[in-house]
Image (cartoon, rainbow, N blue to C red; front, side, top):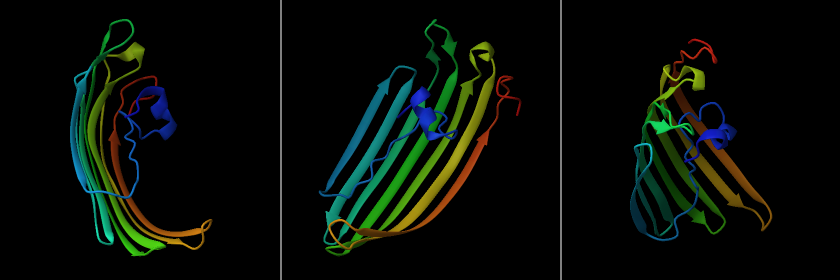
Length: 171
């Protein structure tokens, strides 16, 4: 999860962080379950299952991310809240040695609140996201150096954001 200036590279919809999802094809059957915790009331729960059977491979992930208040460099408590869930599902069918078809689904839901700029820490800026997308991808390796890809994509992005921070405008 990227936060702060690094997250700004990913655009205005990166409120509360960015989750980097590595796209890959499963090479072995395995599952992982992880928990991490830390400063700022941080909790992260993640599950991943990947596998391969015959011409099929899959990767399924689910993640819950919770974060609370933090302290700035001066020791001032900065109110913040994030409760996010990410789910992904990817299923690939090998057609032959040089082509495959993949269905890829991703969903991100979050409710969050962060404070205004340093001059307006008493301001609370709540929001929520309910985004999902799916892709159907056909890959065909024509030669060692030439690959064709046809992708059908659908994305739905439902984001609500409210700010009372005079620096950014009322809204």
